[in-house]
Image (cartoon, rainbow, N blue to C red):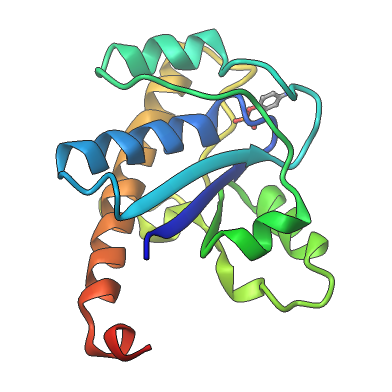
Length: 165
Ligand code: 4NP
């Protein structure tokens, strides 16, 4: 069965749609589009229904990556539906943990940068109020994180433990 990954930021118009677009792009490149499903959401509701930020879309497009979807807010159902909920920064991370009051799904919630292999960053910086370079940096960081994530999920999928589960 396909593994399901949800990327989470604050507004769901910059970082998390970029992560979703990058992961989908890598999956298509690798012929793995059926194996891993991904989506994105925001902890806030300020931009619900909007397209990804134009600056983020343009920066991604320059790398041949299209960003899809409209902003939505994360829901309690997401904790049930997704295998991993990957937060862009600590604020998003603790917001998610706070929503999961029972703690039942805490193990599914991680910082996306935990999967980075080249960048030492712990958080993906919010590019919203900054310049163009901030959007490029978000794409660089998320490409590293998504490549590391794919490697991690492949290893997990191929391990004997997961086959017997
Ligand atoms: P995102 O960026 O969380 O990466 O989508 C932001 C988008 C909007 C706002 C902040 C961050 N805002 O304050 O409206």
